[in-house]
Image (cartoon, rainbow, N blue to C red; front, side, top):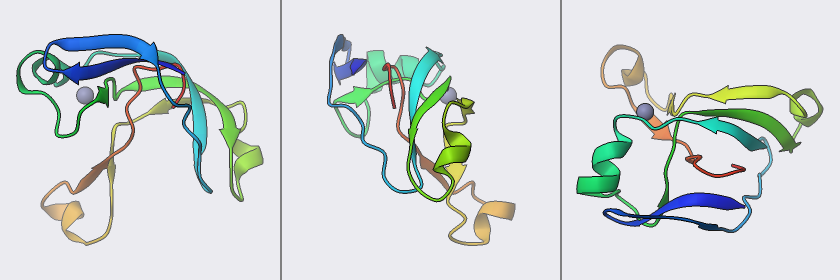
Length: 112
Ligand SMILES: [Zn+2]
């Protein structure tokens, strides 16, 4: 796949990357549109990311082109929009207190 990759602060490159492989219960999405979030700007130009290199873009939409698991047939070909923060629901705290979240993969790429 091709992706915009943040290699270092201020150093973002469009390049070929390893194709993502969905696991059981996951889907592969062909990205049709990805936004630039306000949180991306300082990440790219000032602060960097917790882990580099990083494929930027965490708000995106596209089409499911591969799916694995029990509901795979239900997801194939669907148009999807991805919300970047998903509650882990590992405790009851996320409901009333801290928004415990798991950040999923990012998508300034052609597939994710
Ligand atoms: Zn955002």
